[in-house]
Image 1 (cartoon, rainbow, N blue to C red):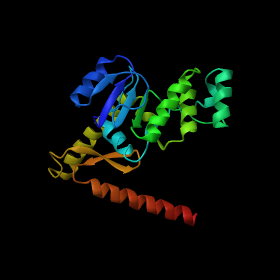
Image 2: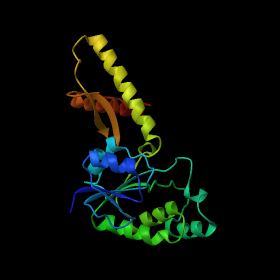
Image 3: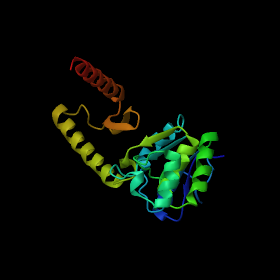
Image 4: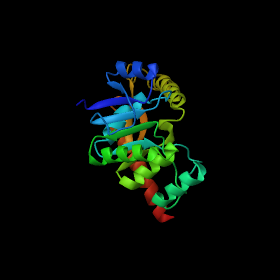
Length: 225
C-alpha cells in the first residue's frame, strides 16, 4: 500500500497534473475507507493547498483525520431540510456548531479513520453532505484535527500574498543588511499546530524561540492583569 495518495471525487486535470508533479498517486473514486495509509479525499474544482500537504500528512501521524472548517458564519442549524436537521440534532444534540469542508478531507488508514468514512458514506443517503459528515464525526468520535478555513477558501490568493510578502521581505533584508541574506531562500516554519510563518533558511529555531518568548510574555501580562 502506498503511504500517501489522493482520491479525486471526479475529474480535475489541474489537480491531477500538480499531484503528478509532486509524485503523489491519484485515483478517481468516491468517499470510502482510505485506500492509502494517509489519504486526501478531494472534490473537483477544489483549490488544493499543495504547499501545505506536508503539514497535513504530519498531522495524520497523530490524528485520525484532518479537515478545514467550512464557513465561520454558518452553523448546522442554517443548512439542510427540517428532517435532516432533526436527524442531526438527535446525534449532535446542539446545532449551534460549525460545519466542515469535506471537499478537502485527510484521513488516516486506521480503525477510527475507516469507521469515520464508513459512517460518512452511510449518513450521505439522508441528504446534506455537511450534516452527514457532522453526524459521522459525532457517531465515531475520531481524533480530528480541525484546520482553519484558509486551507480551502481563497488558498490561491493567500499563497500569492505570501509570495509577495516574501519577495518584499527579501528585498528589505538585502537592502538593510547588505549581502548578509543574499541568496538565502525563504522557508515555512510551523510555530504552533497548523500555524506557519516564513523565515530565512537556517533561522527556523530562532523564529520558534522568539514565538515562545512572546507567548510567555503574553501569559505573564494576562496573569498580572
